[in-house]
Amino acid sequence: MHYFDPPNIEKSILRKAGINETVLVPIKPFKGALPQNCLNNVKAYIDSFGGEVQLGWIFSIMGNIALKLTAHAVVKTNEQKFLCVTPNPYRKDKVRFSPDNGVNALIVNNFLPQKLVPLITNKMLDNYLALEREMNDLRLANSGLVSQKQVLDIQLKAQVLYPSILQLAKENTSQKDYCFCGSNKKRAKCCK
Image 1: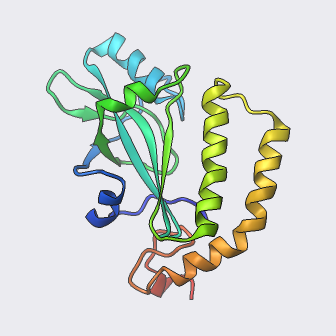
Image 2: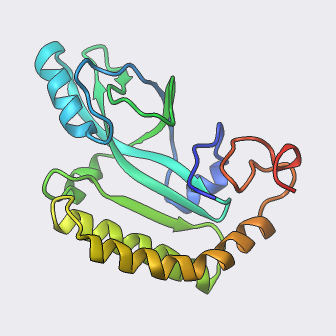
């Protein structure tokens, strides 16, 4: 089980994260653009072709029990259209994006933050997401550099919780939902 980008996200799920609007933004990687380097990619594109930086959020779901919002930068073209210029192995043609200029205040050392939103009420899930938040906080505080010991400590704690998290995902995924495993198939045609 891992975070995945479902073809559709219900509005009720987005509302739990305080998101009211999303747009599908075409992905056209800029020559020389690097994965997971969207802000610098956008700035380089703008230097060559014009436009402006538009910050916001992209989304992924873990097991239908947690929503991850990852801060993301896209180009707002001179024609006032959005364009993603960052290559992404999980999203080929379009990315679901919610513009949010408030992201600018959350950037630390040129690193963009994440937010994690539980979709169910469960103490184990809260503990698991707290570990992910801890990793994100370490990444932001240390310019992306996290020691191997810190990573291993967090991973070990997460491994202890993982069986319970997997069971929660199974229990909270109906046959008509996208499968908790992250395959982007409906559960009825995937994991039983």
